[in-house]
Length: 341
Image 1 (cartoon, one colour):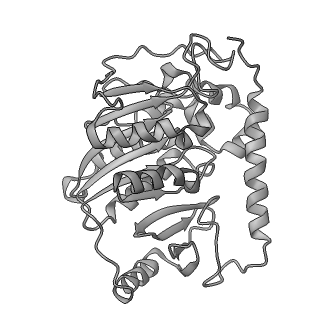
Image 2 (image 1 turned 120 degrees about the vertical axis):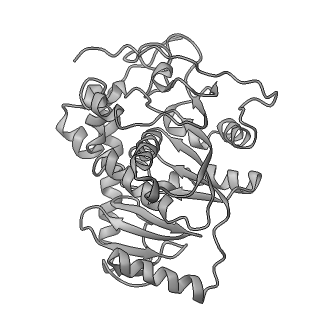
C-alpha cells in the first residue's frame, strides 16, 4: 500500500484554529457571560465536569476557577462556588424529583482536542442498544495537565452517590486520563476511596506508550498553544517517562480496539508499522489486556465507527469483542520504537 505523506503541524494547527474560532464565536454571540438560563456550549473549550447527575452538570472554569451548574440542555442554571452549586443541585433533586443514580454506569471520556459531544453517538448507542446508563464526561483537553483532568474525573466518580459499579470507555488521551485517575484513587487513604467496584474498560486507540506525533511537536510553540501541556506529556522522550509513572494498569478486565490499515505500513510514513493516521498499533497495546481487536479506520473517527460501537457494547456485556466469544489477550508488549529527538 502506498503510504500517505504527512504534515503533523498542519493537522494539529488546523484543528486548533477551528476550536479557537468556535470559542470566539460563542464568546461574541451576544449572551452575557453569567446570564442565568442562557444556553451554553456545554463546556467544550474551558470547562471540566466535576459532578454529573442525570444530565445536570457542575463544571469548573479552567481559566477563572469559578463553577456553574448546567441543566441537561446545557443552559446555565446558576454559578458561583462549588459549595453553592452543590447546594443548588440538591434542591433541584428534590424539586424535580430526580431518581437516585443507578447501581451501574458507564463513564465515557473523549480525547485530546475533542469534547464530550464527540462521544454522543457512541454514548447513545450504548444506552439504546445495551440499556446502559452512560455518563459522558467532558474536560478542557487542551488546557492544563493530564493530572488536572484526572482530578476532575475523580471528582465526578466521588459524587456518584448510589452507584456501586463503574465501567469505562475512552478514546485516545481519555484513556490516559482514566489510568491517571485510577492511580490517584488507589493512592487515597482507604477511608477516602469511593465504595465502588469496576466492571470493564474499553480503550479506543489509547496512546499507552506515548505518541510519536507528540514527539514531533513537543518543541513547537504553536502546537503547545493549540494542544496544551498534553503535547509534551505524551511525547515519549519528553514528558512521557514521568507521566507513565502516574498511570495505573487496570486490575480489572480491559480490552483495546485500534484502527489502521491492517498491513505493516499503515497510513503514514512517519510512524513505524501499521498506524491509524496518528498512533502506531503497537503503541496502543498494553500488557494485561484481556482482549484486542483491530478495525480498518483512522484515529479520529473510531468512536463513530459502527463496527467499533458493536465491539464496545459486546465487550461491556460479555468481556469479548468477537461474537464467538474468542479473545485475543495481550500478555506482554515490547516497548515501541520511538525515533530519537
